[in-house]
Image (spheres, rainbow, N blue to C red):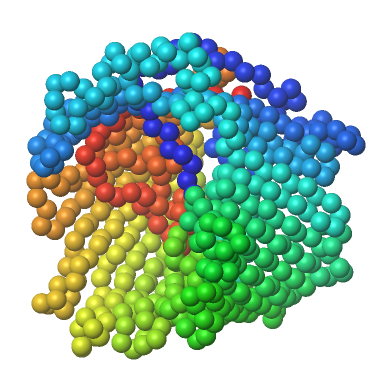
Length: 591
């Protein structure tokens, strides 16, 4: 669930001062962090007097200017060049509140103050001499803002809530109601072996949770967490109404037993819920045999108006884990029938977890060979057809990994990490009656992290390769299709300045002149520039690639937490080149 990507255009920076008053207790929200984790009240606010408030507030202002040019013609993609296409100027400001109104009532809110995207210039798509938006029209739209700043600076209306969460805590009952992109301050979550209740960063039209209060959570060595929730998430999950429930009982660190229930409907009228619904119930158990050995089991069943609860709608999983002084290991196995759906969890829609219609196993081993060297193995097995695994596609994924700390060897603060991925597919019987096993190279990467080097406080270098294959029916083997080379370099020159470079170098089997083999990006971020309010300044240039998917000042990686990556990877998130080049810059105030 990504933040809204701010793309605006133009070649000029915003002039003039923007002033705002920071919270009078000296509180500052760290840049780029979720407020639910970042906020720490000042000493004066840490222990408010009875009935007093510790709510902090501030304003986040982002102003962006971006120019885009086409590097290939639109019609065929074969004619090379550099043709100016459009220019945008965009800005938004959000007024946030976070903290305790009193000891029982917590607030997390964000109000949009302004949010606009002004097109300064847009060339004609068909190559005509008359642009769709001329520079005069673009400047006119900006100038018109001064006649009605509140209205004209809001494309979708002024003063709307981006998010709002209200938490009421009492000794016996806790109530939480939320709306919008709340991240970890929003929904509850439960993960056993399967994730059966997943936390969505953007909770859509909202949710309402009821849970047990502090006086009903602990009874001796037993800890209980009970949640009953209702949600309306039509915008993000295509379900007008839904429910999820959790009962989780822990006995110290020794054992855990949990039950979850999830339900949703596609009906837009609540009282028609019984006519179309999907439901899932799960039970999870955990037992620590010793301080080093843990056993887990998880079962889930799906039922509803179109699904009967039977052998075709069940999933099972088991896992054994060992944690020693130098060796850590876990082995998990899952079976999921074709009609399994966790409803509120992870069932392959966002990232593979339950993976309906399959049988899987996962082995993870980590060995601290020396103080400076760790080696590990990520080994996975998947049979795609749970009904007839002997006939379906089978994949074995092998990923060895290493981490080498050079500090104890060479006396330099450098960490070198790497991995490689080899896959082996046994073809499905319907594809090839002989069902041969075909091994192939899939991915590899290396990362070097150096600290306190002569020219930088920290340097991170990532190089990764990825290969896609296609089946050659004539030879009963795979042929390489795409071969991607991904490069990322990020350097913190000091506490204020970061520079970064990204690159793609790709090859494609049977490519033509429309294929773009390489892309480049470079950028800079400077904290606390000497302007009113000490904003952060950023700028970047891209050619044939766009790695700024989450924000405009850091390269977006495939292993970013937003992606819920299941395996180690050092690749850029998007490996395909594109038919565009951009020059963008902006300022961000955190006041």
